[in-house]
Length: 338
Length: 164
Image (cartoon, each protein chain N blue to C red):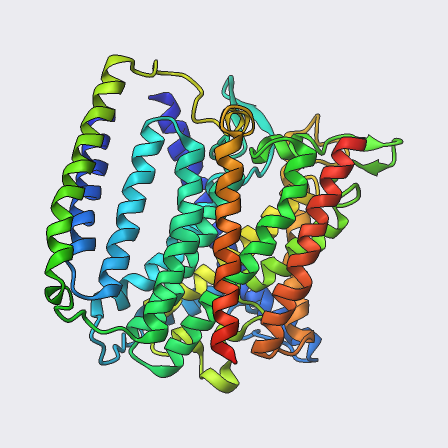
C-alpha cells in the first residue's frame, strides 16, 4: 500500500513540474525567438512576460470551440487526447535523478524503472502518430488530411532511424532499463572525460538520434505536417480552444521528453561531478543538460528553413537509415573488440 | 485485483475483436483492432511478459496499423459494400477453418492446464527471450527473417513494374 501511495505522490509531483515547465517552455521559445530576431518577445503580461502562460491558458479555455462539419465528431474529439496521452506517459520512466533518503525511506527520483524502459518509450512514440493522423482524417478538410498523411509517412520513416540509432547504446550499456543505462555512464576516462556515450563510442548514434528526434516531434526543419505556407496549419487547421491547446501541449511535451531522453541515453543523465554524493545535484545536472537541448531546438527553429517533402524522404531513407545501420555494425564490432 | 484486471482486458479484447469484423467502415475496423492490441498488451503484462507486451505495441500498433490507416486514408475507402455476398464459397470455407482453430485453442489450453508455467518465472524478460531465440529457436528465427526478406524483395519488384 505504501508503495502505491509513494508512486502516486511521485506521479503528482512529476506531472505538476512537467506541466508547469511546458507552459514556460512556450514562453521561453517566444522570448528566445524574439532575441534572435532582435525583438523583445512577450513582455506585457507580468514582469518580463512571466504571466504570459497563464494568460494563454485562460485564452485557450474561454475561446469558442469551433467544430468543422465532419462525419466523425467523436474521432475529432478523441484525436487530440490520443496525441497528448502518450506524450505525457513518457515521463513515467525517465530517470530525473538517482535516489534520496527522505523520512527514513529510500526514495528513487524517477516514477518507475522497468526492464523494457526504452522499448516502452518507442511504443509510446509509435502511438503518438495516431492522434495526428486521426485529427487529419476527422477534420474533414483537405489541408488537415494532407498534414496527417505527411505526418504518418514522416514519423514512420524517421522512427526507423530513431530506433536504430539507440541500438548502439543498448549494446554498450547492455540494458533496456533507462536507470541502468545512466548508471553505465558514471565515472570518467583517465579522470577527465566523462564516460558518456556521446564521447565514446556513440557520437554518430547521438547525431542520428538528435536529427531523427527533431523529425519525430515535427519541428523545424522537419515541420512539414504543419507547413503553414502550403497547408494552412496542417493537421490542426480545424482545431480551436482546448482541443488545439492539447495538440500544443503534446508538441512541447514531446520535445521535452525527447530532450530528456537524449540526455539520459547519450549525455550521462544525472551524472556529473559530485552527483554521486548529493543526488539532488544530479537532478540539477539532468535539468541543465536537458535545457541545452531545448535551447538548440529553439535555435534551429529560428535558423533553418523547412525541407521540401521529397528532400525530407530522400534524406531519411538514403542518408540517415544507411548511417544508422553502419552505426549498429560499428557498435557491434566495438563491443567485440573492447 | 489481478482477476478483475484480467476480466476487464479480456472483455475489452473480445468486444473490440467483434467490432473489427462487424464494422462496415474500414477505418472503424482498424481502430477497433487498435483497441484489441491495447487490451492484449494489458493481458501480456498481467502474465509478466513485458517484452512481448511492449514489442507488440511497437510493431503492430506503432507500425503495421499505422500503415493500414495510411492506406485507408490515401485510397479514401468508404464503408464496405456487401462485397462478400458474391463469394458464397468463402463463407462455407470459414466454417471448417473456424472449427480447426477452435480445436487448436482447446488443445493448447489443455496442454497448459496439464503443465502450467510456474508463476514468478522470468520467461517474459528480454534476456531470456533473446537467449531462446538465438539458441533453441535459431532456425525458425532465421527462416522467418528470410521470409520477410523475400516479401520485401517481392514488394520492390511489384512496385517497380507498376512504375514503368
